[in-house]
Length: 168
Image (cartoon, rainbow, N blue to C red; front, side, top):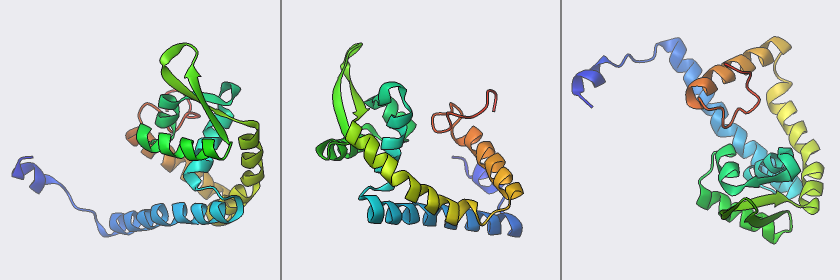
């Protein structure tokens, strides 16, 4: 990068810096909070819960590993490691993809579905108590709008925002 380009970058003003530091604090605190609750109540990490949840929403509760990797913003090696752990617990089953012999599918088992259903209320309670309930309805709408705006920049293909409205 040219030093003239570096010098041209405008710093954050006081209000922007304040907002940024608060946002970073939330981004750092929420994952640990979710992990702690899920580990304590369900012996799942938040990422394992997320993998199970993504499978639960897929047709036949089955996805190609590459698609699941994309949806969870995970590298295929990391996802394979986590799915192996879930498979060892009987929560997920991997099988060859019937339409592409080079691909592998991951499917949520009945036991995985039961574990997810049992974990969901506590997870939702934690999200409500720590993120949703402290906000007014107007602030929840603002959070949604702000998150959508950021996702349009950070995730233009809507890989992690599959419910985004068309053109959003």
